[in-house]
Length: 105
Image (tube, rainbow, N blue to C red; front, side, top):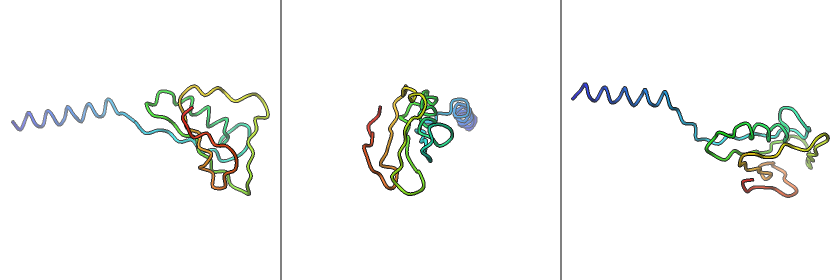
């Protein structure tokens, strides 16, 4: 009986190590109003699209320092199409003005 219990425990541990499941949604933070690069909305959209294999809905939140209002405008090409469900939460910015998209897109 003891051998069976130890074998079952080892089998469970092995399965957990082989098949880890990460079910947490990724959160991407926009930290500037730049058109591209780290911390930009464009980069957050790209990162969310790249995380398409996640079984959960990702989030894009805003934490842009400095005096509001903060305006984000694409200066070059259009943003990439959003190819995987994501919540873009404009209300996450402390001083929020404007329209926020808070439903999955």
